[in-house]
Length: 414
Image (tube, rainbow, N blue to C red; front, side, top):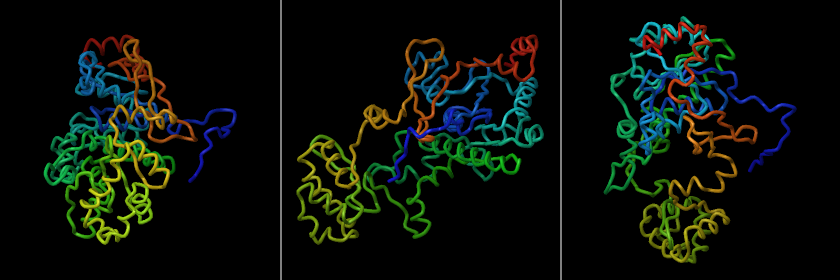
C-alpha cells in the first residue's frame, strides 16, 4: 500500500488549489448542478451563483429546519453552496441577459440545469454564449440529455432512479422496487458534470477551444451501476433484486451478530476459510455445499444461516476488528450520525465547520471534498451566500456604475 507523507515540504509557499483562477457561473438549482459547482469551488474555483431575484435556488426552501427554509437558507441549499458568491439576475429581462453576457466574457465555465431549450429561449444558449467567449466551457445538466425523445421531460432524482433500473435491483424479491435512501441519481449527475468540466478545462489549456458538455443524469446512473449493467450487456442475464446479498460471491453481504449488523465480503477462498476458522465454524470449509465458490452462491441462504450462528457470539464491533485484522473485509452497518462521527473522517478533516450565513451564531457543518490534495484536505473559505449577497459587488466588477445598479434594482432586474 502506498504511504503518503502529509508533511512533505511544499516550498516557501502553499501550492495553488487545483482550480485556482478558474471562474464559474453557476445557474443551477436544487442538487445535481449545485453539487457540481460545489465540487469545483472546493478545489479553488471562483464560483458565482446566479439566482432569480426574490426566490433564488429552490433548495433555499428545502431541508429539515423550517425556520431556515423560510429564511431562504434551507439545509439542502447550505449543504452544496459553500465557497460561492450570489448574484440575483432576472434572465427574462433584457438588462439581465446583458449582464449575464458581460459576465460570460470574463468567466471560464457556465453550468446550467434547466430543461433543454430553456437557455436558447432566454437568448443565452450555447451558440449565443460562445460568440461572447469562444473559450467558454458550457455544461448543461439534464435528466436525459439535450437530444433524444425524452429530452424535454421533467426529471427528478426518483424519476431517474426508476427509469435507469436502479430501483428494480434494490431491495428483495418481496419488496422491490425500492429507491435508494438518498438522491443518488442527482449526486452522480453532479459528479459527472464536475468531472466533465475539469476534463474540458484540460483540453482548453492545450488547444484554447471551449466546449459544450451535455450531461445526462440517466446515463450517469446507468454508468455507475457497473457490473449490474455490464453483466446483462455481455452475458444477457438480467439482474434481479437480492437485498443485501452480493451476487458475485458468497458469503458476501449483511449478517446478523450479537447486537447489530455486519457487512462481510469474503469473496476469495482464503478469506472464506479465515472467516470460518475465526467464527469457530471450520467445519464449513469442507462442507460439500460450500467447498467451491460457485456452490457457496447456490447455497447462500444455508451458508448465511451457518455463518450467523458463529457471529452471534460477539458484537458487530468486535467482529469488525477481528475479521478486518485478519484480512477479511468487514464493517458494521452504521447510522448516518454514527458514520459522520467516525474517527477516520475526523482524522482526514472531511467534515468542515464554517461560519453560519446570515449572522447566526451557530456553526455550519458541511462535507468537504472526497479526495485530498498533496496530503491535505481542501478548505471551504466562505459560508454559503445569502440570496443576492454579492450582487452589488459583482455588478461593479462587470463595469456597472452605482446609478445603473440602483436602476436595475428598481426595475427588478436584480
